[in-house]
Length: 110
Image 1 (tube, helix red, strand yellow):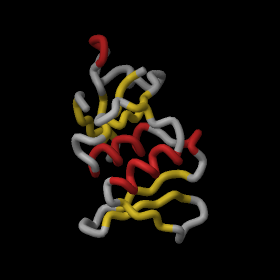
Image 2 (image 1 turned 30 degrees about the vertical axis):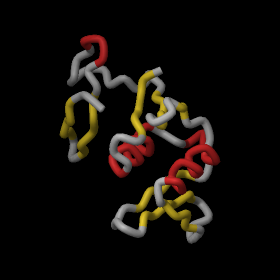
Image 3 (image 1 turned 90 degrees about the horizontal axis):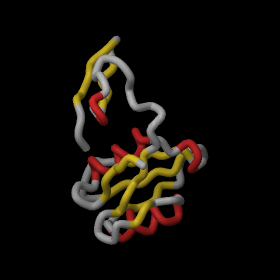
């Protein structure tokens, strides 16, 4: 995860400076991201694949909210909340997973 954190209009976001794009100008929104399970270099293409990896890492599934997939790790205060529909799985969700599972997942550009 490389780039610059930009604070603008009360919001902090990560802007990757890919290909010399201006940090204050365009923001890479057209570039698709992939979540990769680094031990096997596997691209996560479904929630079933993601859930199997998270459960193996000690995460437990919560079933409290019908609109979200949620995972909690007992040894931490971390909670991963994802939209139920995988087509709404965005880079912000990917980075949340990466931050809470260092050296296990990474986000890559397509």
